[in-house]
Amino acid sequence: MTNETWGLVREELIKRVGRNNYVTWIEPLKFSDLKHGVARFEVPTSFFGDWVSRNFSDHIRAQLNTAGAQVERVEFAVANRPSAPEAAVAPRPAAAAQRTRSATRSADLEEVPGAPLDARFTFDSFVVGKPNELAHAAARRVAEGGPVSFNPLFLYGGVGLGKTHLMHAIAHELQNRQPHLRVLYLSAEQFMYRFVQALRERQIMDFKELFRSVDVLMVDDVQFIAGKDSTQEEFFHTFNALVDQNKQIVISADRAPGEIKDLEERIKSRLQCGLVVDLHPTDYELRLGILQQKVELYRSQYRGLVLSDGVLEFLAHRITTNVRVLEGALTRLFAFASLVGREITLELTQDCLADILRASDRKLTIEEIQRKVAEHYNIRLSDMIGPKRNRTIARPRQVAMYLAKHLTPRSLPEIGRRFGGRDHTTIMHGVRKIEELMATDSQLNDDLQLLRRQLQG
Image (tube, rainbow, N blue to C red):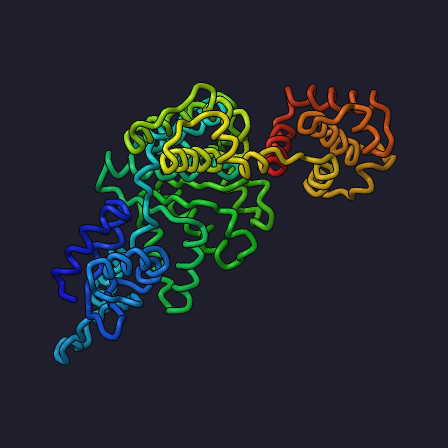
């Protein structure tokens, strides 16, 4: 295979992986050789090579084979830097040596990008509704790149509610507005991976300099560092160093800082010192808006397809778990209708999406609610349905009653029987008590939102 062939393959890869991914991960690759079915490429760092291998090697191998190269495997290796000549190894003053080390580290830093951004995840493609309007407004403010008004911005919510979309949108907007800014976006898992790699390769100072030299640090799914003591320690110091420099930090997680089990208290406190915003579960109007936007994108791809009235409304009403499931259902529906050449009717929708609709119809049981609430408040399940009336037991019991009333179709007498044979008036009193407290107790509201997400997710 020649470099010319690799050049043609790269042009095709732009279409396959998107321009952002191409510029970040494919363009820096340098074709080395092709022997015995193994195509080898030089990469700037080992982390870079590992990432490309995990995420893009299949794309690269497929396109090479399409170009006639007959490749069975793709390998990536760090380029060998030429050794310095003997005369250049003379002792140098300490200050000059430090400058040289700093310059070398800075060069490495420039070579190590963050995780790739998805070109689809912009503010223009984010559908705003009541459940996410505060999170969207806060993300917009950060993306304007002005003075840091709240640090960190902490976005949390269940799967498929738009956290990662907003994170990518912030990064895209900052890069467009201020290209000179060093914006580093990555997942907490990648942060941990880099930290462990730096320890193993004795490059911890390079690691520290990388993360302390950025202008904006964005860490997705921070709950994954919980319980990892050394990683939490380094994250804490990185966080403090950036805040002291007035650098913006944006964090996301699947729950509020105080609800992340095994996360150090000092980190929880730090994360709570900025703006903490909850992306609430989607409502019907927001789901319908998301579907309508998706249909507009599909009209050019699936020309001639007819969408019957009521289909989008049906999907928005029936699929309530998360946006990813909703969008995936619509994608499958359009692809199926295109393949069989039929109009997208309500009947076709029910046939094509039968498995998704069945999963969405899963009935939540009172026993599931009781177990989840008991676990959340750290009480025994036997106390939940037992006779004890002290507040540490009674309040969680009332929360479980409230959720059973609103999340299941069971009647008050039925719910009462599942709570140790209590009278339906007791259940009614518990539900009303929670409804009254919700008007003034923000912690209770947070508990209810978290429990709803866990039970319905």
